[in-house]
Length: 117
Image (cartoon, rainbow, N blue to C red; front, side):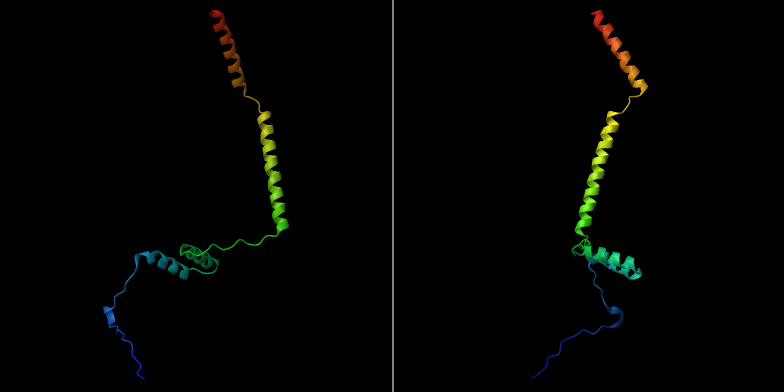
């Protein structure tokens, strides 16, 4: 049985051609940036690179159900207190003196105009 040898092109020095796809250039730049970083920064940039390449986002961390319910109840109470405070401020709001005086002057003028006709 004869074994066929594959034909290989021999590379001759500086005559080597490099083909680059323009779509891959931004990803290559990100890869280079990743290699220059270290530690936590490297992990974050790897995640961003994978997301750009089409990977799924990482799942949320597990939180105990009781803690979730407590957080929701606390947020709900704070929202209710905010609305109550806002309504109380609106009801108890005092008009500035200048506005009150203008209203009094306008009413008097209207009465004079009505009497003239």
